[in-house]
Length: 86
Image 1 (cartoon, one colour):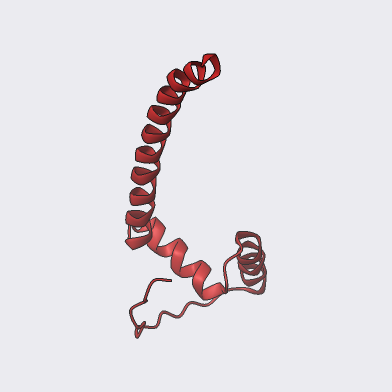
Image 2 (cartoon, rainbow, N blue to C red):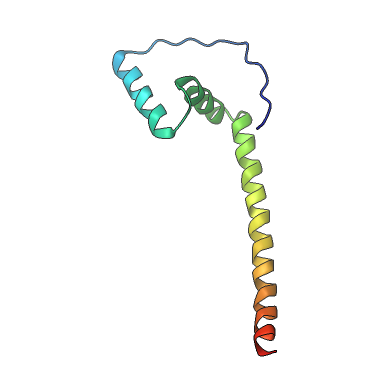
């Protein structure tokens, strides 16, 4: 688990009852731990913050993994037929 930096800044907003109910539903549907986590992630994602950078890193690593898996599959397709005929 990653060590998080202490969060010392506070942001307050006012919502109508309908807006708050909608926010609660969205939080629950997303699987976020709390409304704060949901809002923080949404704000950072929309502002190109750290979460967006993390997403790009995950996408890059998945691309590398895909390339490696393709290379492995290609090699196995050569080795397995030889082993079956031996």
